[in-house]
Amino acid sequence: MLETGLDTQGNDEEVGKLTDGFHLIIDALKLNGINTVYNVPGIPITDLGRHMQANGMRVLSFRHEQAAGYAAAIAGFLTKKPGICMTVSAPGFLNGLTALAHATTNCFPMILVSGSSEREIVDLMQGDYEEMDQLAIAKPLCKAAYRILHVEDIGIGIARAYRAAVSGRPGGVYLDLPASLLGQTIGADAGAKSLVKVIDGAPAQIPSPEAIERALDVLKSAKRPLIILGKGAAYAQADIEIRAFIEKSGVPYLPMSMAKGLLPDTHPQSAGPARSLVLKEADVVMLIGARLNWLLSHGKGKAWGEASKKFIQIDIEPREMDSNVEIIAPLVGDIDSCVKALLQGMGEAWSKPPASWINQVSAKKDNNVARMASKLQNNNVPMDFHGALGALSRIIAERPDTVLVNEGANTLDFARSIIDIHKPRKRLDVGTWGVMGVGMGQAIAAAVETGSPVLAVEGDSAFGFSGMEIETIARYDLPICVVVFNNGGIYRGTDANLSGGTDVATTVFVKDIRYDKMMEAFGGSGYNATSPDELRRSVIEALDSGKPSLVNAVIDEEAGTESGRIGNLNPQSVVSKKQAT
Ligand code: ADP
Ligand code: MG
Image (cartoon, rainbow, N blue to C red; front, side, top):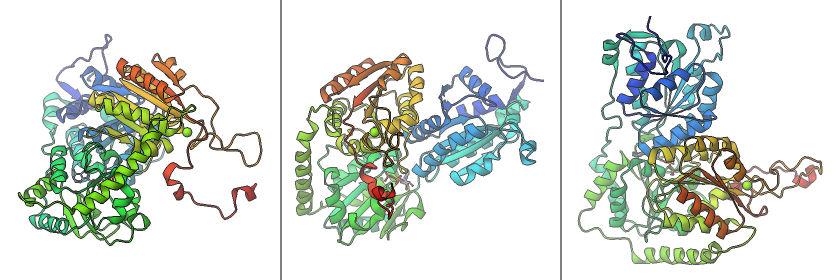
């Protein structure tokens, strides 16, 4: 029998002419260019992580699987390769599942790899250690789910998971690895031959010439055209072509939050500060890698105004067309191929939109920017969102390579519009679900995958979901500065318990928390900032150090509105809050 595991010196020695499940999994991942894994160790995958590390892979251990999963999901977004999250069975698997569903919802390629218990016992429901039919549970929450039972299927199983994650519309894939698979042996030669390298995992999907012509005809006919860039456009990494297309078209564009920076937010064609106007007034809207979901009010209703609209949509997923409103010019294909074909089809002489439209958008934009300017310069104590975010916005402008991670309610809404982004894929946030707790995982993966400094701007509530991961940040000595916008509660810190009882209100935290002390406890640097000037100094010092740091930014506890800008989504009781008490 082959001895698996490490020898007494901790070396990972090759034994005999056999290989096993542990090593074939590693070989298969490496063959496919996967060298980083986000995990929480435990039975049965602890040794798998050890062997991965011994074989030159980067294995980052988290404190909770959900954060490891969010890291893997955003690694997929940043690299176009599946991010790998590895968990133990049942409870660890379930903890990772939220992130897998999040990856699928956001169209990020990710593979959740979970160890599982003995099939024979699980299937007879005989009560194994951490018994659960994980494959069945994962299936409805991801793009594809596979289980590998035999060592000779590892090569094909991993290739299948890889291809499912990255091809077509990217998404989450579940890969179930029963404990007994890991120790199975096979001849080293047969094992090597069983590996599969995925060739052309996300093949170009070339749009039809008719679809290109149709789209250009509609765009040409527009009096008030608008382009909307979504995170699919950021994912596509067709940055040069997208910029060339937008500039050649002369059309104002609106970036969705994670598409900010695809063209710098300071670009003259950016219609960001005139969002309401362009949505209402546009007569032709071209969507590039953005869905007409709730984030765009489903393409209809008040936000879109009275003017009738024609929609052009570029998406790799054919079923996205006509999902909410009629798409008069569907362009099914990958964004890179579509945008290249559009550029070619435009020819030399493309006439830009009417000056009246461009001037109307610019005037609105200038007006809104001017109105905000003084608010963003304020040095109020206690800080409000504008003063604090104005300071951070200036830092990002000076350091455009910094990756901005952002979550919270008010902290998210204000930062999204206040902080300009200057380069592609430099803003990572809560995505399609508006999920809280993604920030620490995203910050860690951004630092690991890009090597860039990271500034994570976090609401105090959002931070709390995965705050313990600052130990992970400290352990790997990552160049991450976390800024906690501390207003003492969810939305704000001033709510009262309507019963008059002794418990604080449901949305209120302990007063005057010093989150910076948490980072100090793990050996990183902590700062307490009470004014925008102090915040600026702290963040600059932290970023210059390139070390783990946390700035407790003390925000007025009265600042902040219920659910930020989406308070309208809260159902209202017919009995008023006062009457109910
Ligand atoms: P946002 O929230 O920023 O508006 P969405 O997540 O709603 O963005 O939309 C992203 C869209 O991009 C999805 O419909 C997805 O199918 C599409 N997409 C992702 N990658 C590509 C690609 N390479 N080519 C074309 N479409 C893509
Ligand atoms: Mg708060």
